[in-house]
Image 1 (cartoon, rainbow, N blue to C red):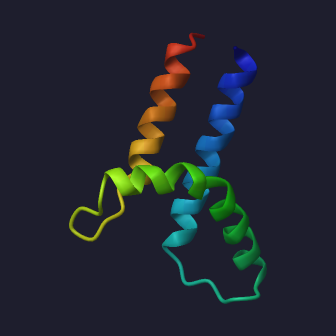
Image 2: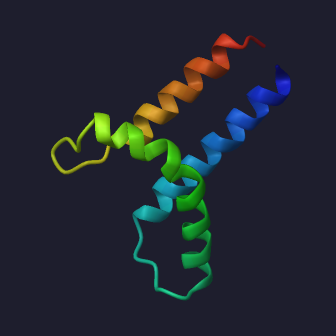
Length: 80
C-alpha cells in the first residue's frame, strides 16, 4: 500500500508541475517545452476524460483540481 500511495503522491507532483508550467509562455524547442510535453503526455490520459465530464467554468479548466482531490481521497483511503 505504501508503494501505491508513493506513486499517487509522485503523480500529484507531476500534475502540479503541469499546472504551474501552464501559467508561463514556453518557447517551442526549449528545454521547458520538452518538460511540459512530457508532463502533458503522462497527465492528459487522466485529465482528458475529467475535462470531457466537467467543462471549463468561467474559462478555467478545473480538471486538475478534480484530479488532485481524487488523488488525495484515494491516498487517504489507503491508510497511513
